[in-house]
Length: 358
Ligand code: F6P
Ligand code: MN
Image 1 (cartoon, rainbow, N blue to C red):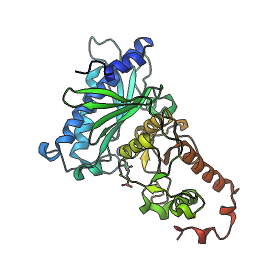
Image 2: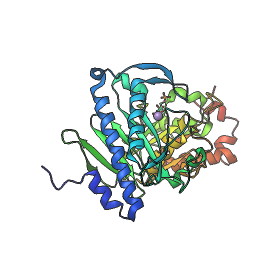
Image 3: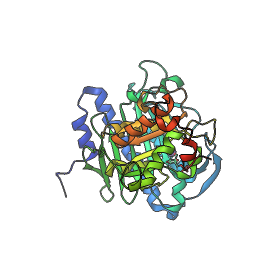
Image 4: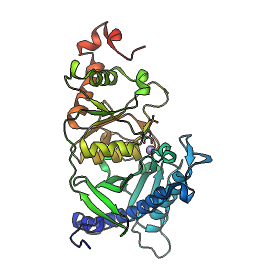
């Protein structure tokens, strides 16, 4: 036995000491950890548990639901409903928010709203590549029933946020606004153990992550950034870059937290009705909090993600996050493009110079 180890519960008790409110937040995070353990167990059994493959149904985004999407959603919903601490929830898998009434005799301790993506990167399930869960906790209104608008709070108001990654090991990475910390699941004992205290994203990096099959739909500042990375030693950056794309946001962001890098799912013109692919409330906001709390930055290209005032629960946004110096550079490229202050964008040669321009 390693009695000196810090379990998730011990860590949260030590970090959240501010009275009943913080004690309940710690309890809620322990509940989330329990749902994560259930999902981790299902994902690790894979085909043996008959959980792979798709269902007939589609979710609100029009995406085909995988069996594990629905099972993971159910694990979170049960946790939040039965746990007695959340007054309502929003899930990627459900069109409308769910609102919970206090059950008879229950002291109204339902102080929180939970917003989550139960199984992110689910196209990777059937090919046995890492997937994850993402969650965000915000405050519920006091003394009245929850309304749908109550969920529309900017990311800066998140009380806690994080993700679980179901990889070779299962990890829970979270922030309650006091740094970002990582816990690894000790499967035999069933405890999350603090293994990565106060994660810091290196400010510089030579690694980028983007789905380059969309290159022709990107805006010029993103094309410029990627082009300069690809030009390597012989280009303006004067060093070689490396590229990675797992197509599980959780896994790509986790790599960035561990060793630096920049992740982009930028605005593109592929589908003009969508300003980006990723969802603000349960993908961009929680990841932005975790990344900022680890010393990184998270922007749309033009504004800080955590400052966006949400207009709809399933709203999409462009996402650019990771190592501070690179994200800063990409923000400057957007600004130069928008204001026409960069020679590169004034030149009639720009069209010809771009590798990706049609
Ligand atoms: O939830 C959306 C998501 O699956 C992310 O996890 C991932 O980063 C992205 O979509 C992958 O997109 P694409 O299929 O375009 O590579
Ligand atoms: Mn997702």
